[in-house]
Image 1: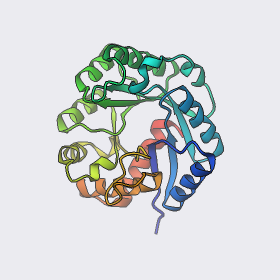
Image 2: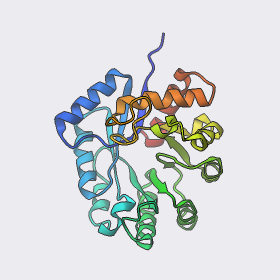
Image 3: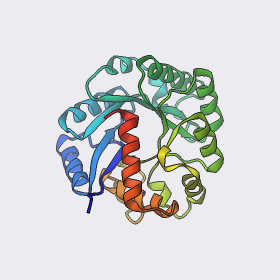
Amino acid sequence: MSVIEWFDNHCHLPADVEAAREAVVVANDAGVTKMIDVGTDLGRSREAIVRAASFDCVWATVGLHPHDASSGLDGIAELVGEDDVVAIGECGLDYHYDHSPRDVQRQVFAEQVRLAHQHELPLVIHSRSAWDDTFDVLRVESMPRKTVFHCFTGGPKEAEFALELGAHLSFSGIVTFKSASDLRAAAEICPLERLMVETDSPYLTPEPHRGQPNRPALVTLVGRKIAEVKATTVSDVAHVTTANAVAFYSV
């Protein structure tokens, strides 16, 4: 009987080294053998690089979250060439909270799309309540060949558009929520070969653990729900989504 292995393609490991180590060990014990630790600003991108250097099964991204777009990209580009950096992001648009002005969000998002093109790296997108403008920026700047909509929260319409552009969709613990029927419909139409799974830990803990801090080990629950939605086996979802992430991030 083959061992089921999972790839959490989007998490935020604890800043504390020992807490991060514990999270990685627990994840490995649960069959999560690879993780992408995602940067959201200059400081957190640097921290992700340090953590990635500490664990053979962890890689880092560098980027500026739309919430922090007002702080500017100074320093982010200089981190791109560091060891274990495998993608640009997370970046994009968030009109739900509007923590940064929308015009600034669009400008900084476009700059990071260009950065991904310049370095031929995958792009990790955060889009919330901003689908039209997100797609507009990608049309203007040309979407990088490897692009993933992390923590995809759209319905079938948004999924179809993203897939037509050539993007991957990554599903988080939200897919397990009772209220997320539109999201499950999007997962149902997404070809398994274009699908990845994530925790976005410590956020968005899947059922039945809502109310607790999320952790990479729980990506298995996301995968199980995807298997249910797509009427396939858990092992098939684990195998294909892991292979997708390995190819996407070239790890």
